[in-house]
Amino acid sequence: MLKIAVPNKGMLSEPAWNLLKEAGYKLRSNPRQLVVDDEANGIQLFYLRPLDIAVYVGSGMIDIGITGRDMLLNSQTEAVEQMSLGFGESTFCFAAPRDSDIVQIEQLEGKRIATSFDKIVADFLAEHHLNAKVVHLDGAVESSVQLGVADAIADVVSTGTTLRNAGLRIFGEPIVTSEAIVIRAPHVDEDDRDLVVFQRRLRGVMTAHSYVLMDYDIPLEHVEEAVAITPGFESPTVSPLHDSQWAAVRAMIPKDKMNTLMDQLYEVGARAIIITAIQASRM
Image 1 (tube, rainbow, N blue to C red):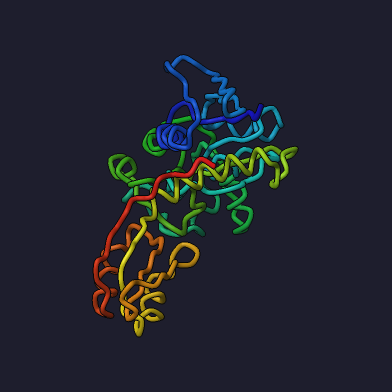
Image 2 (cartoon, helix red, strand yellow):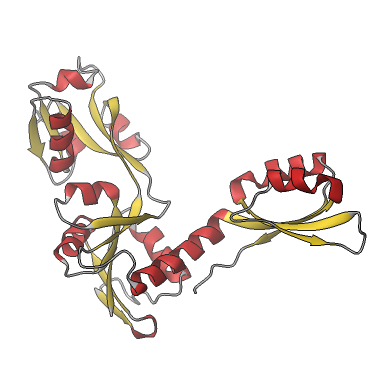
C-alpha cells in the first residue's frame, strides 16, 4: 500500500484533508486516529506533525507527503518536491522592530536572528555573504526581539497581522515563497504508477476548483476570434449547428476570468453562453 503523510494540524491540514476527501480517499473518523487504512484505494494515510513530514518521507519510511515548501527546504532531507497544490501560500521574510535601524538585508551583518527555520536562514545568509547568528526557537518567534534574544526574526508570513501586533515590520526581499506541495521519497520514481494515479486524482479536484465549462454559439465568421478568446485548458471543441452560419463552442476556462471572457465573447457576436461547474475526476 502507498503510505501517504498529511499534516495533523496547522494551516495546511484542513485544506489537505478536504483535497483528499474530494479525490475520493478515506479520512480518519476521529481526531485521535493517527493511521487510516484505505484498502479500497490502496493507501495508508498517516497524520503527522507538519514539520516532521519531510523527515519521514526523506527517510523512505513514508512514500508521499503533503507539506509546505518551506518545511521541505528546512528539513535537510532527500525528499523531492513533486507537485504544487495551490493553497497555503505564504512568504518567509525577515522582520525587525518598527523603530529599529535595520531596514536592509545587509544590516543583518553581526546581528542575532531568531527563527524556527535554521537551515533556510543559514543558506540565505551564506548566499548573501552575511555573518549573523541564527537563534533557534520552536515557537513564539515574534516575542524574541522584545525579550532581548534577537535583533530581528525570520518567519512565515501569511497576512502580516501577527507581526504588526508584535510591533514588527517586514524588510528586505522574501527569503522563500512557500505553498502546499506533494513530496516523494527518494525510492519513489516520479513515474511510479501509484504516484501518477494519486497526482491525477488531486489534479482532477484542483481543476474542478479552478475551471468551469463554457458553452456558446458563435457566427462561423468569428469562430477563430472566439477560440482565441477561449483557448481552453487544452483545446476547445467546435461543432456545427443546424444553422450552417453558426457553430457551437465548448471550452474549459479559468473560473476567475469567466466574467471578462463572457464580455469579450459578446463583443464578437457570441450568444447563448452557458457556464457549467466541472466535476472532479477520480480516474
